[in-house]
Image (spheres, rainbow, N blue to C red):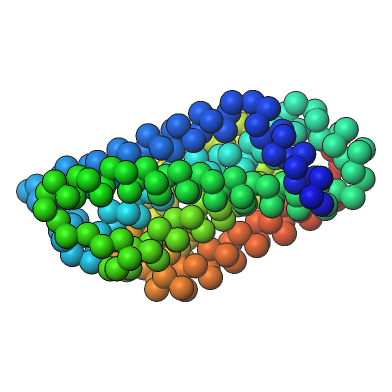
Length: 253
């Protein structure tokens, strides 16, 4: 298994796609953190003040805004095998397909942790000095901030696993990526904003991630962080199992 995981990392770093996705993730995190701090106290801004526990948790949960890039990374990891016809020699070298998919899940979960770590560091690099300039008292070991940062790391790792599962279920790369973006940016946004159904948003993957990272959204109540974490893990397991099952049984020709 170790050799298979190492092979997945070799494939990952063979191209620069992971780097461009990371750049996009970092850019989005930097934007979200900057807007959260820069717009504090502006008229019409419903976000809690940054000197409050809720405000600081919401600020650092902004690092999770890059989750969509983690999902896309996982999707491309699997669909790229089919798109470039490397899946056939891969399965010929390792006939036990389940081991191949398991290695990919492990490798990309670690890659997701890497994405999360970089985005957390970027959020800290921007927020800590800026809040000091604004004379906002900040203690990184208090106010639930460690839990929020840990939630970002765990969430991005799980989203990458979910992406691998989606890629195994939907082999067409364009369809998988576009479908995921539409779901994430349109469907979940619609559910979270529509008063009649937004109470159910906390059970969606995006809502579970928001609860895990202690995000703030007006008029939306999330599950407790530990409950959201368990729900996120459940989503990851379901997509991992489904993806593995389909990859093992499906004809690759």
